[in-house]
Image (cartoon, rainbow, N blue to C red; front, side, top):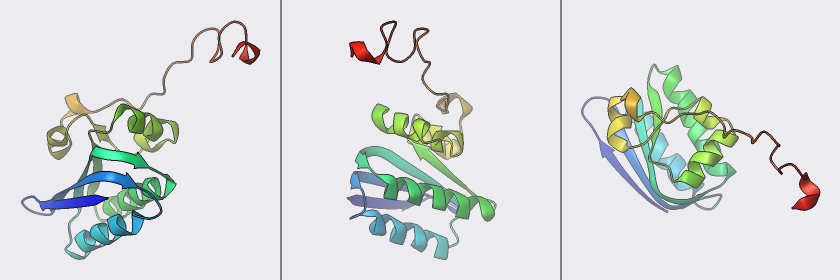
Length: 137
């Protein structure tokens, strides 16, 4: 996984991730986020556009960072997830807690028009398996 950290003015930074965020690379992200905490950076945007995979280790790092930043009066915002990653964020409930934006710029400025909904996908009237039930699948 590659991590690029760009400090903005004041106490904010953008962290761009590319590749796979998993148990093998999670420590790299933790170290980068710890460095930002030590530098008193309280506002972080994580650019997810280059992320091809994220397991529970990566999701945990996002939640932990969110709690640390909000405890300091700051924020964590997620930006530009792939459709699959956005769905994962919604299904596990992270998108309902951590704001997710369509673009990095929207996340940096907290533009409400770029905020992605956290609502789960609607279930069809016949249920997730259709009128015939799971046996037909």
